[in-house]
Length: 506
Image (tube, rainbow, N blue to C red; front, side, top):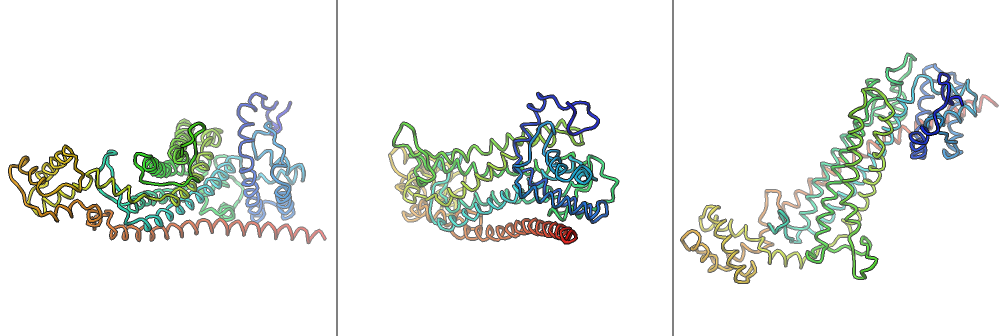
């Protein structure tokens, strides 16, 4: 059997090769890739006509055929692995409709290599816009909940042990702060993805007098990719996006881990409704936080895709190869899609989560996390060095625990006894001073000017977050608008050229 795509090759690909490598890639993403090929074809054909490389009649005929294929549906294109990949299958339909003379002219001054790189970037930037949009939505949900729960005192932990009092609103602002950086990384990677490889040809450009900026503009790119070989050889912009998403899902997954702990019976500080829970097949009392487990797993999925991409790219020569566009990106698209859906789920969870103020305060009062401020009070009022105060309070806690006392039951006498046993002298604090030093609400609101959980500092942090959120929204809107505007111009130009041909035929 002769090759269906080459006059040089004497025979077509072995069926085993088709089944092993070409068929899986051909059928895997046809619904995504064929529309991108259609858009690229439109822009390329229009540019060829404007540059005088194709006649007006050929341009109009090709565009009309491309529109016919769109209307018929891309699933109507017969997929034959013997034709190697998507473009040859698409082109076969064009040639079948127009003949090889006209249909075969569509591919002048380009290669599958620059087409594949272009469609990868178009696919990646669309995902990037969705990821940025859903990250912004999650940040908005966090800010709204943070303002609502800014005064809900909760226990803070280090090493998963009680540390210092904080607030639930302040915790949420911390997650939003990390997501701000994640958004910046997404936006930054977008700028490097959004450069158009079309016109780079197979590796070294083309001798035809094409206008690369025109095709770049018609497809909504910021500019052409400047170096032809680099344009077809590299997928690092997409891998950068994948890397940013790996960090993003890690941020969200860590929040999921915290929520996971907080919703346990033992912590009991956070409530999630049944709409974000699963159950057991055998234990009727179970309310499992399955969606949180999914959030925690997302970073592993994305990182796995990133490792595949990096490991594959490592051994690819600095030129176009099959693995750069197929194997290297094999898991990338699924990982980005699932990460994007996970962001939507995370927003729903944040909006649904309700803190349990009484339980949170109970833990703070019982777990001795307030005593750092008692040590600070000894420094300010009793004139002790901090190290002395640290040891005195440490002994005070030990004595209180031995006597079965809660932290709020520590009094001035116990503190003075501990001081005498530790530093050899008694100290004089009033009962009110000790009480105030151990009051969780007063402790939280005393932490001003240092990015702490006070209502005042939370207000400042939230205002800064809102300002950055507005800037990020505008950057996203500008990027999306450029693509939308280019699409409208492309469609208008296509329709104009088709109508001109139809009018001439009457």
